[in-house]
Amino acid sequence: MSFKTFLLLMAIASAAAWAGWIVVLSAIDPSRSGAVGFLFFYLTLTLALVGTLTVSGTGVRIWARRDEIASRHVATSFRQAFLFTALVDASLILLSNGLFRWWTAMLVILLLAIVELVFLSASRPRSS
Image (tube, rainbow, N blue to C red; front, side, top):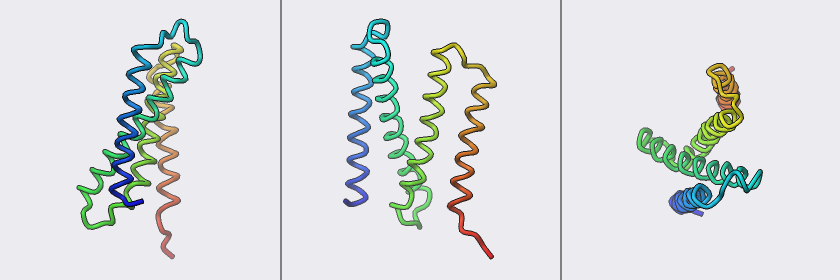
């Protein structure tokens, strides 16, 4: 699969996930659906955010670093999109349970920053 095909399919899948999220918002009553409604809400939101942020992050990286191979930016963009989506989802879950405070948000941000730091440290070539 070519790089452009991958980005196009990812963009189409993201648009489909956003459409699914809008359907979930408009058609599912959270008071009647129970856990299944919340599962669909968070699943479609997660897929839509990860896809959108991956495609847009890859586009920004390609634009900013034109001298590098374009396909190398996808892994970094996907990882950071996933981490940011985890931040959004965790914040929404904490908020829906009445547990969202400034310090819980800071703990989630700190945890995700540590995860990103571990990835950056592991991917950096070691000099001897």
